[in-house]
Image 1 (cartoon, rainbow, N blue to C red):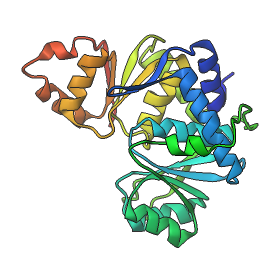
Image 2 (tube, rainbow, N blue to C red; image 1 turned 135 degrees about the vertical axis):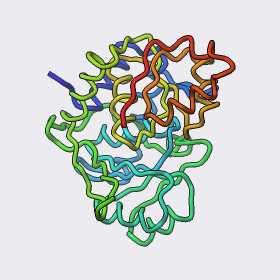
Image 3 (tube, helix red, strand yellow; image 1 turned 90 degrees about the horizontal axis):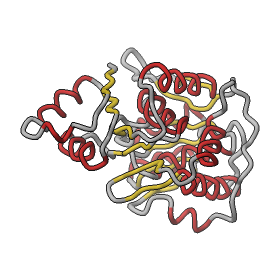
Length: 276
């Protein structure tokens, strides 16, 4: 039987506390450290009124703060609304209004601030120090996971809106969990001591499921790139000895071109998975 999303992190943190969960340049978090930050941030969120079923909007690139906020909201039984960090005020307002979000966690920007104020949504701006200031404000940890059934909503992911306004697709804990299991077991055969390149945006279902949740499911490492850059991708693969590259077709051509003169930089890769 599959577990809900926060229970997956809890299990992995118990089984592999010292294994690296997230890497970004010279920064890294073990699974024990990730779980500790999640529980402390959940304490602040609970103090500020987040309850099971509430919608928490998350407009953050692929940085260490993203999984911390994501799982803190899940710890309280909230539903996460991932958003593109490049959105402008009109788009942000629409997502907040349509989803009924009560909080917006976003990188500091005038658009996010103006949209949140217009919709009466509490804004939690994130700077270069990530969630650190909010962890200091936390009244304590939330170690218990709010009861959530597998068929309860976990996230609301919006369609591109090419034929009309974007529509929120409600994905349950079962949807995401079983997809992560299938990815691990049949698509990438992910092992606990392996590393996935986290260049797919985590606000998209591909990056969320096949990268973040696959790693959390088995205790593997996600090496993050805030925004895709082929030179940075090649350097990260080489430096972190990345084993799996999960990307879209355009990324492949860019990475191959960037590594043209030093193909040995990609020697650690055992598998590359494309979707698009």
